[in-house]
Length: 620
Image 1 (cartoon, rainbow, N blue to C red):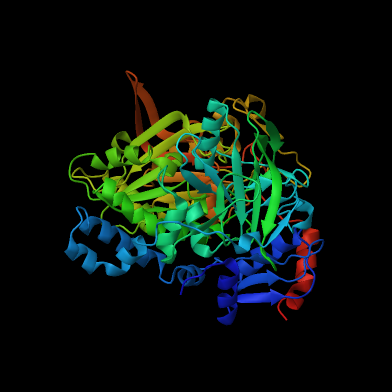
Image 2: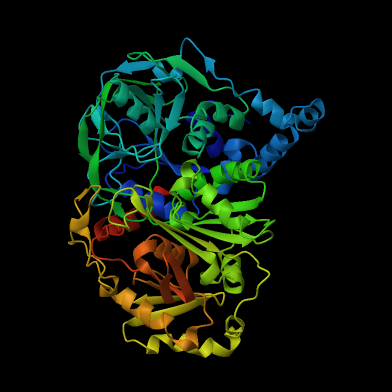
């Protein structure tokens, strides 16, 4: 079954018990966030709020917050779709009739990638002057800078050649007719705007809010630059994507959206945008970004406003991100035939941890592969790559840690790359969009690993007693005999603490001491990696008190979102040989929260209490 509109999909979900209507009035200020978050964690259906305070439009959340709903949206499990796609591409290059016949279902989808222009559209049933105050736009977290549109599908056109891009960038509402345009680095819309400023041309764009699920998934997919997301959506749904001429602009806009915002982004205008509670589980501080001026709003009759909430994982973006990488990750084999599988961990915010399985045909081919991936499109924002051998389940963190235990020798298998582009949302380097990356090669080697690594069973009692070594250690856990997690006393911010107010390219004002040993976490990590009795362990990571060492989602998040590779990684022994760094022994990571980091997200006790008291009434 294919869906032309968000409404079609919502009605189908409701018919299957996958969408629930809430009839009592709810508040878009924090309350919907708490309901959506709790509903997701309890595996509840998607939620349609029929009466939202301050607006006549209903709000729908969590429409794709499960693998089942993603499968319903695509009429096929995304993993199956990805395998069928890559098999077709491999068989059909060069094109031959037998391949097209063998993969006729996929071939039929390709025939639907050509977009279609229409003369009238449901997204233009109503045309109005801009007034964002009428929309039920959420304030998601207590210290957000205001209301944010969280599912905007931004349509831009390259001023040089007219190529279209659709991307999703949060939009901070400034007033009735202006918003921020949060173009992070390596985003297609931002590249188009860069060209417009370079050429001095007016920059028109439109924002679709509430499209069919295929177009939504295509919008967030990490497609190569220059590939039209709308064409990819046609492939996903097996039906052409329809566009119509905008009412106040010269460009085309999606014909079947709930809302369309039409406007311009003036050249060289910037305004402070944020802070915003983001998918790394912390507030991203305010920074200067371009400004979107809305000229007109069009929408369908009886429109529904969709929203999503991001924060400490898992949130809905877990399933959105997993679905798109299940479809696209297999395509990496077309460029790197040695890759057998790859997986970005939602627990780490996707960009912070990528595991790649490689069929290594010559010495250090896997390292070559990792360096290549770090230069590819959205994968260029990856901070940490762990390489494993063919056959290792890249989605199983325990299996990955076992490979690290058995195969990782930092003297040969560790590369750190300083002073390179980094995800704009990554705050760990204290420099906006700049930081460091690392590669851990845990593929099987002909050489052996020190036998001390294999005597872990003889040392179990020693890691358990690790917290006796320092009174600042409050808990420990050993993950698959490889990663020793240490929770330490730390100074997490409270509600009254002030987060860094503005992000700039030089954020030295927010840095802690340049001496990394100034933090408790660093002191403890340095101490532990130097202990001979812990030499059988591959990795030791110190985390803060808000991390649950016995919950995998929590500790992957706690480790991989809070360290800078260049500053916070140490080894038992590290020295220079000429200009080449030499690393030996146990690898230590100070992943504690540090002064100058933004605050982790937390809902207010008042809102939690309100939702708890009303919980049963939401589900009547």
